[in-house]
Length: 204
Image 1: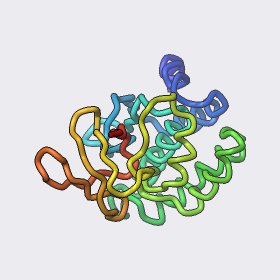
Image 2: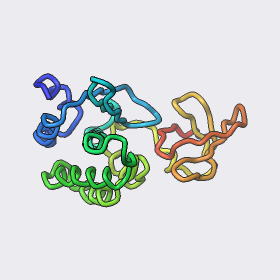
Image 3: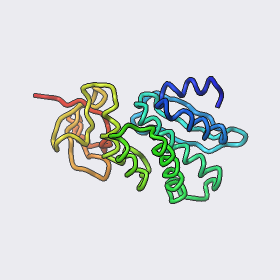
């Protein structure tokens, strides 16, 4: 990690995490892209192709703790890729063990505030393919988001009418794993929308 890269990254993660991240990254080169908000994912990892380095991307709109956990999640993918390439499952035991080890380092160095520590510890013991799939972690991290009028779909009562991205209007339906089957009111079509999607509740 160059000094310039460090200065850019320091804008997005807790200050206490920077020495740890620098130590990790200097040993394992990769390209980090900080992207615009994506509704379908918080970050991703791509293995190297030819002479190109592996790439990690993280959404720029995340609060510092969510950004750090997402970055750590993707960095675990990088470490597993370097050791196994694509010979193991993306979120198999190799990734889970690696991610747990990385989160443990952050926890031991007291990077997270007191209220997040037990939630992150629980997540580290049973990591999921996406932090968004961990409802308890998502709610805890959201407390550190800038204040706005949006709420997460999973927090609404069944049948609540809401807008997505202040455009299309839906009614919340039944739960399907991590998503909800919602009806778009104008077309009567049904769509699966992730429970952590930020929506605006419409009041009559």
